[in-house]
Image 1 (cartoon, rainbow, N blue to C red):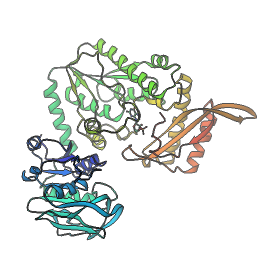
Image 2 (tube, rainbow, N blue to C red; image 1 turned 120 degrees about the vertical axis):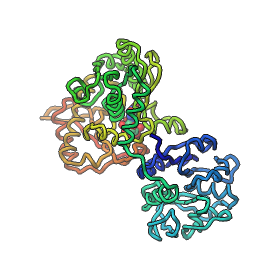
Image 3 (cartoon, rainbow, N blue to C red; image 1 turned 90 degrees about the horizontal axis):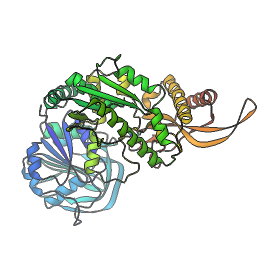
Image 4 (cartoon, helix red, strand yellow; image 1 turned 45 degrees about the horizontal axis):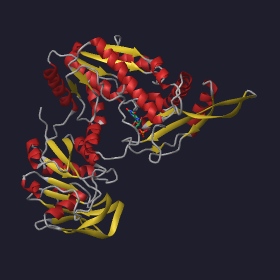
Length: 513
Ligand code: XMP
């Protein structure tokens, strides 16, 4: 099924993905592409509308990213946001200058509600502003549709040509009526009908997977995480027995997790999957023995994962398709991103080199995380699984600082299980983005039952985040922390101290390594 499409052209703004997500929240399919995408390629995609993102540059500087002004002659509505709005002004011979006063933060903007972009929006509305340049003069044929005291052209449009510019960021939550503005653009201006729904996605994916795979065989590395689980169930729905799922237990899973994954996806579970569990715990511990460097630990776990997987694949024999649970943010980031490497690649392992397969299938590659979850629900995967918090591929390996030993794995598994239990009991799990226990490499002196102890300190972490790119430490109720701490110290041998991590991201990261 061919969905209606909006294209976001990325000019380097930090909210490019967010724009696409917001458009999809309006039930309209949306893709992000580099600003340099040729007009021919845009035409071929037959989009209903185009959105220019913001960006850190000044349009009038020579090497700033720009597209051809022919884009405005394609008969496709265009919305420029921030830098994107300035670019419209610049390309169509308006004037963009450094503003006498830059604007940053929540700002009251006066909007002309006769504009189709602002239909139903309050005449004075709070928007998120972040700019040092501004449109000093709109191009000929444009009228001003919004303003602030220091930004006289905070919005402009040429309704006849379907070109709209807005200095504020409608995609950011702080722009109170931003969702309305984007919805106005895609429905009122681009004429979309809203055909992007997860039930239709699931049905059409099943069809196209069947066509692609034919009588072939496919192999999937199942971690039990949301993405690979949804990919697995979707694939199984499409091709049944032709799919084999390999689950590698690397001994760095949460307490009882290996058995839980097996219970859901194994022979006793409801999905009728060809499921193979590989218990490779000892093998991983041996490889990791003595290693303390975080990056090396990640690499060892990733490589060993691939080796185990390859060995299993060899036993199965030649497969035609290798299935990966890649999702859209991975696609955007690897295609467009230029950000610095903070930690080595997040997906454990990457691609096996020695597995004999012809092609890769990534059935979720066009979905955002929330869409993967909704697809999972459509497929009948239980909510508990679909709304699991993320768990890193290297598992507890990045939650044990310093050398990994089976003893330390036991400690962190037990402490984490208690912590999760207490959070569940307090009924606050749904308010938290992610929470877990980690094992610091620090030992300190304590006193238990009149006996001196010299044991480990466990660190508890809980963060609030929606995108996992930034996060703030959650202010957990003191009684929950107190209960968890006292149980951990009493019930987990080898721990005599519990610390709470109050750091946000940045400057810290969510995981410890
Ligand atoms: P950081 O620690 O970078 O983590 O702030 C951001 C989010 O990514 C998860 N994470 C990983 N996920 N493989 C994964 O699949 C990894 O190697 C990995 N490292 C971190 C982390 O749990 C958090 O949700």
